[in-house]
Amino acid sequence: MTVVQAKLTGMELHHPERSEISLAAVLHALSDPHRLEIVRRLAEDSEPRPCGSLNFGVTKSTMTHHYRTLREAGVIRQERRGTSKLTWLRRDDLDARFPGLLDAVLGSKPVPT
Amino acid sequence: MTVVQAKLTGMELHHPERSEISLAAVLHALSDPHRLEIVRRLAEDSEPRPCGSLNFGVTKSTMTHHYRTLREAGVIRQERRGTSKLTWLRRDDLDARFPGLLDAVLGSKPVPT
DNA sequence: TTGATAGTACGATGAGTATCGTACCATAAG
DNA sequence: CTTATGGTACGATACTCATCGTACTATCAA
Image (cartoon, rainbow over all chains, first blue to last red; front, side, top):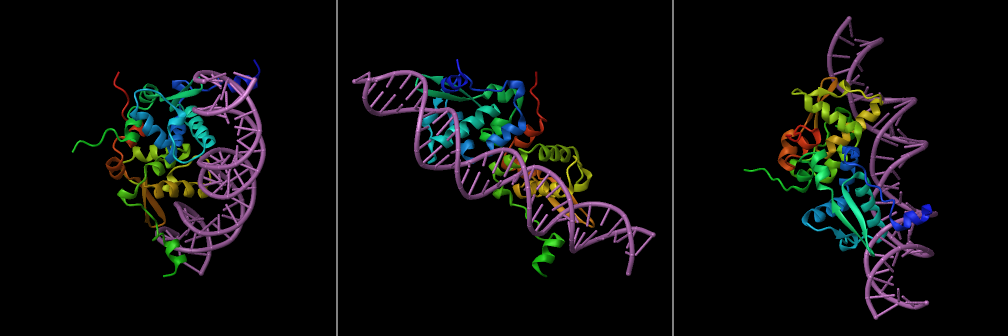
């Protein structure tokens, strides 16, 4: 299989190991408003969702860019399923590596007053 | 007093109000390794410390840039004291605005195993 | 007043990045 | 095979940013 074929079949999708996930990279990935919104919506779902199910008025190319940024930082996991691509949060990995970070970012743990 | 004088005396140091602190801006400010290290060291101190007390092998200009980025994001507070400038974390504001975020970033809440 | 210390302003530079459009591929349905 | 759907690759553009060097200022001490 050629490199081009590997790219096109998505076999090369890079996901960092849990231990390789860098805090700075995660924070950078989350520091873009669009990506933050992607993560917020993914957090609402128990099921993985296809990339195209989100739309903020940017083009498909741009969405691909944001998904790749999140994936390479270790925030999301992606897998091809037929004609689309499923995406979900790497909750377990993030919680293990940076406990409380994702919850804090999602605001799912408001202060008990 | 002229604008130049105001700049030079540091009177114009901008600090966002607590309510104005943006999550994306904070995450961006923290996504740089140098700034992350600044925050980690500030977190170790109960007393404010002068800017110059940290050194990572970058120039003073670059340090000024990083401090300004942190300050304008609402992560730190700065105040002139004589010839130097004291810097400290805005812990209360960050904890109130994004509960758990700073602790998660600082890793001060490791998973109980 | 003279010097030393701590920090800023400004301009430049090189790298990164958010965005787009166009062309393309892969899979599934007809 | 043809077409539609969902997504990627690539190049371009404009913007941001991390870094530096130089010149400058403010404050304090001698």
